[in-house]
Image 1: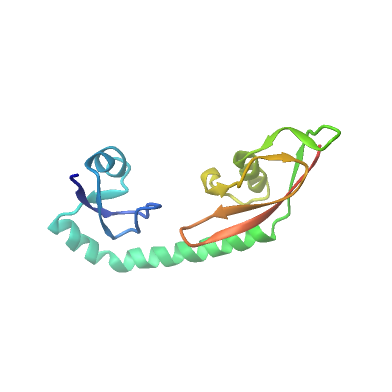
Image 2: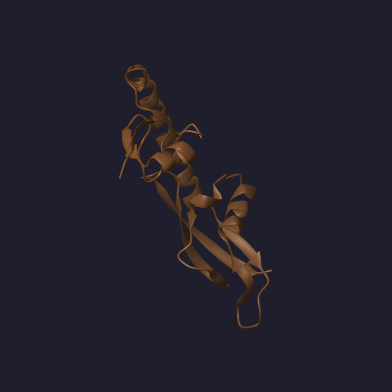
Length: 150
């Protein structure tokens, strides 16, 4: 199978970090990575330009890591209570989704992308639950969710 050699301009989850050279399928490169500005074709000129910006990329990665660690601490310290309609036997009329969790966090001033919230299964009962939020590749936070009767 043929592959294209690209240089990542931004971190791409499950592929690599900014500045790395990767080999990907041509369709993935043409249809996803290049149009979104996530990668560029690996040419000698691009490699020289990447070497010149290496320090800037490392500084940005360090700043992003520090910001992610601060966000993880805020998430773990937050008291997240979600009121939901429930029956007499504590089953919810519906379920708690990633979007509801993200909106509850946003109301507390903690902005988290919905796609970074990972539920083990659907939350369909009242009670206390643990949710993992992957902020960066190697930084995640564990949030305690308390689902109460509305």
